[in-house]
Amino acid sequence: MSLVLNLILQTIVWFGFMGAIIFGAAGTMAYTGGWLYLGLMVALSILFGTIMARIDPGLLRERLKSPMQKDQPLADKLVLVPILLLIFGGMGFMAADAARWHWSTMPPSVQWAGCALLLAALVFVYWVMRTNSFAAPVVKIQKDRGQAVISTGPYAIVRHPMYFGSLFYIAGTSLVLGSWWGLATVPILALLFGIRIGIEEQALRTGLEGYDDYARRVRWRLIPLIW
Image 1 (cartoon, rainbow, N blue to C red):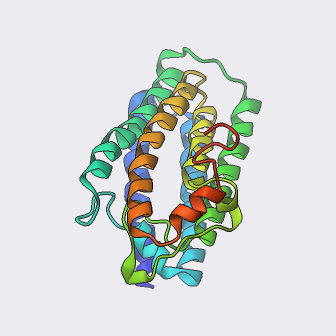
Image 2 (image 1 turned 180 degrees about the vertical axis):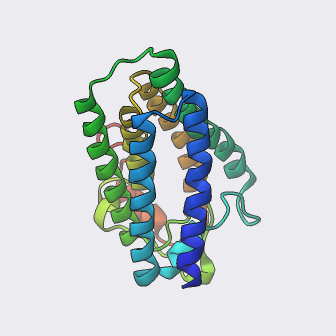
């Protein structure tokens, strides 16, 4: 019960902060895209988190920890800063673009398609977490939890499927918020993910037995058939 309460509290705080950024940048509370995004995210975060609390509480505890941890490589902390700034700043830019500056004009049908894309991305990320109980938010080897190489499910296709799904999450967010220009954050985020993947793979190759063999079998790191 305490884990679920922690989940609910963090969801309220996290998306309350996001809401402040979105509606502050929009300059109005009458912003349908902002309410669509927040409503969908809060509902799905609590739904998936509650399921995870029952079937994999160890992973949920890891996911609820701070994105900055003492056993995390310094390089990972340094690259996480621009990633988080891009995500939060990008959402503010998307909201300002759609509701304050009106640079983008997007029909409601595209915004609803964005909702579908956002839902699909979150379901994919949930699949990743169901497959990999060691999908922590930071780069580290979880020796206390007996971390092992995962090569099934989405990991049989790409070595870092969480990042792959996150790219579609950002694209879906941009559409839900009604910003065409916000889609420009996707390739920038992919570049930052590529840097973080290099840091993560170094840790996995040196600290996780069998990862080199897995990397030889699964060629693609982030995007299948591309890289």
